[in-house]
Amino acid sequence: MNKIIILAFTLVSIFGCTKKQDQSTVWIYTSLYKDTIADVQPQLEKAFPDIKFQFYQAGSEEVASKVQAENLAGKIQADILISSDRFWYEDMAEQNKLTAYKTEVHDKINPLFRHPKDFYNTLSFPVMVIAYNSEAIPENEAPKTFKELTDIKWKDKVSVGSPLASGTSFTSVAFLVDKYGWDYFTQLRKNNLIAEGGNSGVIRRLQSKERPVGIVLLENVLRLTKSDPRIKFIIPTDGAIVQSNVLALVKKENDVEEKQATIKKIADWFFSEPGQQAMTKSFMYSSTTDLKPEGSPEFSEILKASKPWSREFISTTMKDREKIKDQFSKIVF
Image (cartoon, rainbow, N blue to C red; front, side, top):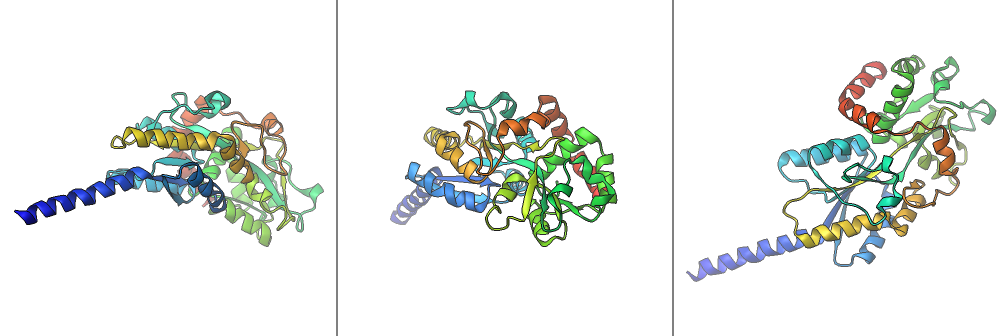
């Protein structure tokens, strides 16, 4: 009998500790760069000393795949999601996998960049532009529009990220197809377009001159301002593509009320000035302040020519996500 009692107390102790640990650990799955996480994590630990922060860092599509795999296994480990495939978040909201919440700065976020029922909010704005290696292409000869990249003069010179690997690349494909149709990518393929990996792959090809022109995020170029000033950017006159770096909370029925409240406070931190400073330090535009990345144009200038987001575009693209990926693969790969 004594052995049974001891075993019972041991099991209670083990499971009690596990539950306590689970409640004090917050998992953030994100496509933010590792140096951004290295900047953010100490600030979070200082602001929330009783919380242990764990990060899973990968590209947007890999984050989505991991969450979907965990969902199929019966439990999503992530508490907070931060990545740039807005259409996936729309799907997650429809599946009732996200918790609705209003940030403390709710009214500062443009309604176009938050879910109508507050299942996600845009944390920051990455911007897709054209970049080129000035050692290979003189400034006066660099392409000025996305459309111009279909010209024969750019054959064997252009690369992009793959929409199968990168959320921002998928968003860019969706916007360009909406603007120019699939013939645009047919013409790019005739020019031997390389579409592989994510934005870092485009930057590597720019630096090596394998592909001296690229469709890539502005933040990747601005990171090179001091280390490789050969890489320049152009805001296309037919509109840079404004991305939506989204933050959402995973819906968890078993979390105690105290932890749910803490997770919302952590989310609020990201939308506060310190959190937004971390985003602009990583060369993205703030969604709640006038802060902007060092060396970047004013966001108002970016918005002038860029195609605006709309609920119709979001809904249509979300429903056609797999079709868009399949069609891109058929044309480009």
